[in-house]
Length: 429
Image (cartoon, rainbow, N blue to C red):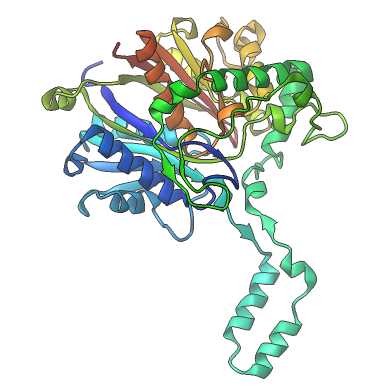
């Protein structure tokens, strides 16, 4: 592949559970911290960057075109353009693949890409009736008019809808993301015990890899009631995770017959990640030793009720484009939206009937060994700041390839709304 897209380096903030250590940081602030740390670590001249591309799902109203806000606050020149992208859970990967497409089209050679999310800061929403009453109150000129407007309010007007719940509900199918995981658990006969065992392994791997993961993390000073010093680690992995503790949690989405719990689902998280990427030719000119390369990517749609199977559709399309098989991977990073979702994907990868009936393929994709999947833990332990996860997967995979002196990594995510994303990465070890 001539003039491939090079990933020169990357960095991320710690990933912290919603309402904890990073609650005082906005999405644009987290993104700015990641970009600033990236430029500091690499010593790269920000004046050479052609464009900044950042993913964010719940884009804050007070930071329109969040990528531009991040770029300016991180010290990039005012003449450097920036654009914000949104592909739900794959927004951080979308930023990377858009950079590749722009480079291929001759619309730039050097990019800063990434993703950010403050799920803590996702707002509450008032009903249209309440909003209309607030507007009338704001327009009232006299005390009498204000009193009249105030008297029209009802108690229900002060019960806002939680924006996070709205964002995690598919507007087409009406299913929450957790309910889509329950669909997969039933259809693929994935037991509660299997889900909890998968979740436990995610925590165990993340705890064991804490020192390793620290290499990709920049400290964040977050003076809050919960944290007065620098935050240097993800706070999702639990040293005390146990089969008994996970088994004691109640189902969150189907309380009568369900098996998906807060313990075997991804954590709701704040965090950001950033990558410095450029064409291979430009990297050679600048004498930059790459961390790795993007060797192909694909997106595909699927049934929104089964959005968790999105990786299968993307992987099939990626195989058609590149000729590479999942078995060719030395490492696999699959975003752990839910344990049931990942386990369903792995079962379906070995299913001839699924390949024939759903992918139009005459042979299955073939599931990789569990030993090479999410070797440092996944989103069940580390968390899933939705706009940033795609970038984090790429960064974690490439750094692990370098540690192992391995060559190929496969990254894939399911995407809320019924899509999937997949990408091949090559290490430079």
